[in-house]
Length: 175
Image (cartoon, rainbow, N blue to C red):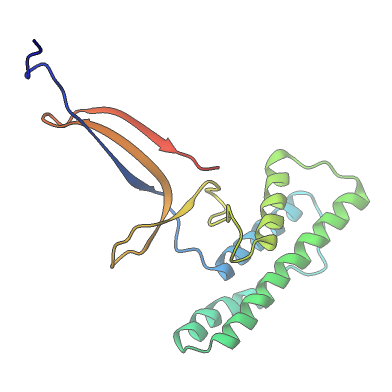
């Protein structure tokens, strides 16, 4: 006969382990990637045709204001411009790296690949890039009224029912 005192019940629950990122809007990601690419160009001593710093500095606040004023057509046009600036800088760097025969470090190559991935992704894409500094972040729907989506990694935690000791924990990386 088994004593009931020796049986341990375990409760397993999943939660979102949030990452330190802001809500990812397209314009912010495009601008951040463009800034990183201009830094890569500076490190490689490449002179770009244009960095688009001033144009983006003026456009980024306007995008937020257009959205707030429900001027979505203007907002989408401005986002498209920032995306175009990113593409131009990326192609300019790529062209000059190939022409000059420069070798890139792994970090610089990752920055270029992230920018290509960011330009290619659409609304329907799987494995979207939500953050440049934290690449394995997922958008997880929470079902809460005050916070519909969280950006992070799903984590599973197993605890004992009585004492609340953590018996096991794992991160579910979907990538």
